[in-house]
Length: 90
View 1 (cartoon, helix red, strand yellow):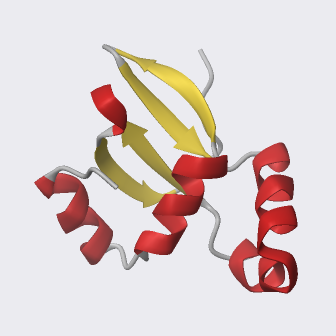
View 2 (cartoon, rainbow, N blue to C red; view 1 turned 180 degrees about the vertical axis):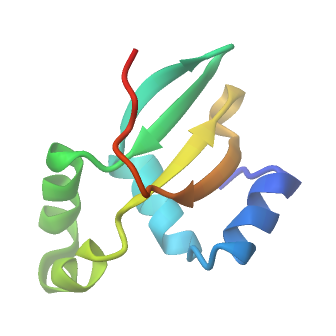
């Protein structure tokens, strides 16, 4: 996983385990956020893909999937955070 120093700091401050970021990058939905970056998050279909992948652990993970990541060039994670509101689509 390629992360900026800022993303590593935010991940630690917000207590987001690297496992969830890996799942987000593998199964999450990606939408353009402008300026060549994309925002990734778990939508309904992504949560189903995680559930199929994780099997019995899916119920434990489901409570922690409300997060997002901003990803730049070469899949470098710029920042991560908890998703408190719906993702705004423009």
